[in-house]
Image 1 (cartoon, one colour):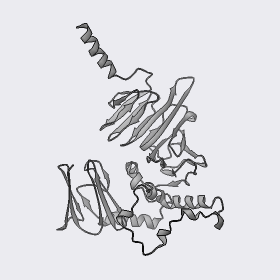
Image 2 (cartoon, one colour):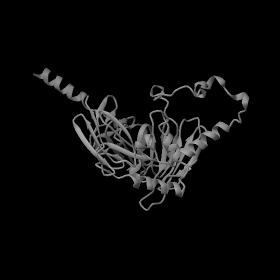
Image 3 (cartoon, helix red, strand yellow):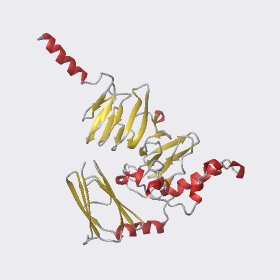
Image 4 (tube, helix red, strand yellow):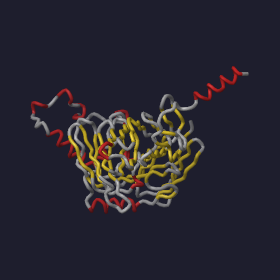
Length: 358
């Protein structure tokens, strides 16, 4: 009996995390996530967080509150490593490594000069701030400074790469970084709200960022003052010059995608006329059964670009649909036995049914 009891006790001990100094705990949890330490542990409320933990949200959302009341919030498919956390009267510092997803950082009582967050393409020095970072798995990042409760700048952050740095000190001011060897884009102010900031910025960014990115790319191209002798003809794709060469769906390179492309184009602040036109586009199409943007209840994402209305539902199955925003449709998604019906512009006799099973 003593031997059996010892075996049971050993199995119980294996399921518990190794003891170390607790630096915070999970204060909010939605869905599933895990903490990777000596082994993966399922995320749960009040789970103790330690230095060097790797927090992976997968299909869930996690909020962590540290000893100094610093708070980080992670959306789905985020990956955060806590490189260092020290909090005492004589010394305090924090170093976080963010690999992918969207994180919101709300600073606490730590010495702001010793708090930093890094991605593959940037290092962010935090001077008492509330901000978000959206990062692709390839390292490209969008950094947005958020306002305080009165609508003013919540503080200041300095975004640095190996080629330069920019300072964000205005509400919803943003910059992007692509690789550490390139300078951050010129800061611009986005016309968005906090509810809009999540992983959808990677695939459907706001409209202010793209022109600024293109301008930055042009400046980078001109930086070394190339002439004709600098052209590498081996990198030219001469097939693109052949007008008789037919481009088909088989020619699409899904790996050659800049997931922040639209977002980078948006960073050149919208002119008033463009903002008015965007408002007209949103008003020109009515949608019922789901909401514009990412609807977490129906898990349908809907957005309008010009005359195109795009919908997608990606859960266990993947469905994508592009429609004329001026038309009237009834769209039915049936995935794994779950049915969602969406009517566009009141619906009509035109019905589209997408049925998917494993």
